[in-house]
Image (cartoon, rainbow, N blue to C red; front, top):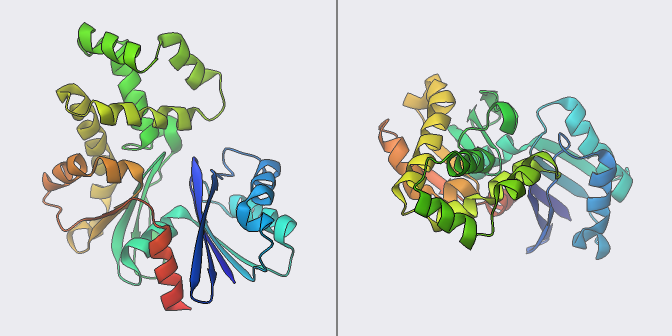
Length: 280
């Protein structure tokens, strides 16, 4: 029995493969860069697949915040504590997961646009080159957190019309105090900022909101994707809710650089199931 996971900062999608049957689960996000090993162990212990008592032989965990061996070790140790040392645990960062879901055993430039953002050149076997994402404070261009930050900045600094600003604040139950508390006082400010993209999507017909999204994608492309020399020779693919829900604007941004035939998927987990079934 094999357990697969696509772990982001906001949520983790799980698939349990038993023979020809695949079962789906979801838990809150797991990112060792943001939460402690103790919290991760608690999340795993409370997961439905754990409570159901399945006899799991192998785990493949793809997750955010796993760029270092130390971070991967935290995930490894957490699974050992919950499932025992007899289980084979394979830990990779979410870029490998995205690349395998998008391209299988073929080369391509894999991108993630979710709560955070990331990118890499994948040669069909592993990540060969990667521009550092740098997180939601220093980087993460085009991500949900980045979009949310741009949106509230424009909203509170009067970049929008007074009528539009007042309408959004009133109808979405937002205030400056509430926004500042969500960013500076409450845990997981990146998740809070990313959650504001749901409001942006509601008002995407507003030209200024649309321009904010377009500019954010332009920043992601110019600071990340376009810096890979392989861009001329291979396909580009995107995974993540931001890429999925704002796909039209993303494709428009890509078209400016003559990048076409782009694959966009909301979540990589089911394509990862296909990859692992095909390669094992």
